[in-house]
Length: 394
Length: 233
Image (cartoon, rainbow over all chains, first blue to last red; front, top):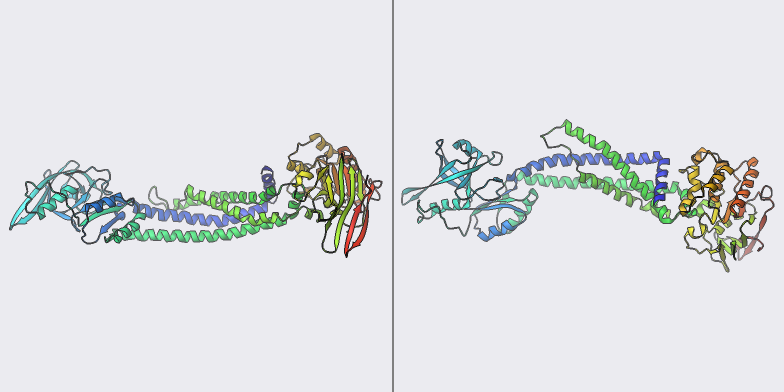
């Protein structure tokens, strides 16, 4: 191995112009591919990153009213592709007749009540149990709320042509940022929401007893979020197979994912075509090298260099050339990527072009695989070079 | 056969349907010198290749092929019988590896065989062959005559039992032929090598007095047989 490596390297150094041409050819193929890959990673990655950062893009909205049992929710919570699910009593939001902040005095009428629970992606790390609430940022402004404020929730009903009102004080434990939820709404626990619904629907529930509702055995709707954007489509398909109609909250997320997938396929196709072209060029180049060195290989046979070590020479040369080619490519491409990012600066932490260590490792691995497979023709040719050729080379 | 360097009977190769080259009988001990003296095209280089085991022999009746008491079989690894301490081969065309220096070319067979380098002998060879100062030059940076002397040093560095010389001075200008032949003779003697020289101009020079292997041509069943043979010793 050591002697083969010495001979391979000395031969390349001697014929350095051929080696340089080969490395230049590899850089010519690889550099544009890596820059395209970096742009694909950067632009699409940034767009997908923005989508991932917004949990609303992972929400599936139930279409129409259904009839979902507690077992359905248990099953959905157990799925790997579900980040969060909470039952809802109606296909549209339940509405509080009014919400009031006593200090300072402020009142807002007809405010949507949204069921929530532990793990809600819109309320990360905000604790919430019965008697507590999280307000949207818009509602915070309208009612001048702060964390720890008490909101009086007013629920009204008509019973025998008489108006009845139930009231509950809820402690505000946090706020939903405006970029996650833009309108006025109050996020409350499921038991509190069920209490509101029972009070409105069940005449036996009085304004004095309404806060202790029995659980529902059927729910008309739900709020559900997939664990990742990639889980969105499979989860939608699964629910529709179960007869539950849903649609993604953000259709553009699905379209972008589809675009990303198609772009990946397109890039892979371009890369494969380029790799095949380079593979053919490399195989021909190595085979040509063996032919040019035919008498030298015959002499090595006469001098007793074992066949395995002779066959190793083109393999070592091709792998060395590929390593040099990849290194030269990176020397050119990495500064180019830095310049691109400098010239098209986006938000901090976001890049127009990006190349990961994994991309570089994959490039090197594919290059080495190309080198090894492309040298097969040359390696086979060496097996047909015998010591007698150098004797007859007069 | 004790101490015998070469013991050959009926070793031959068919070169197409109409020609065969055969070494009919050859026995040599250390220090023996034999000249294959025949006209160009008689198959002298082929005979040397056969003897060295570099050309695969065809099947002939009664073939015996022993070098340094080792029988050469068709698929034996070359280093089993052709290591630089057994065979040294000076080619007619003084082929060197173009990407190695003169010194690297000289040392290559010993390195391939993994044998210990005799630096004193190397220094002696370089000095005797006039290669001192040229060690780090590439083959393209030295003259034809110097390349030939590098090839001779490469063949002799392992102190081979058998030194095969294929027209070793054919590329030299006539003024240098006698000097180089004399050098080869002395160095081969220093190395205690048996020498087989293929040459069509050995009637004069350092090997003029050496024993000859007879050459004859026979027609057998429509095939021309070019036969080399020497009296058994």
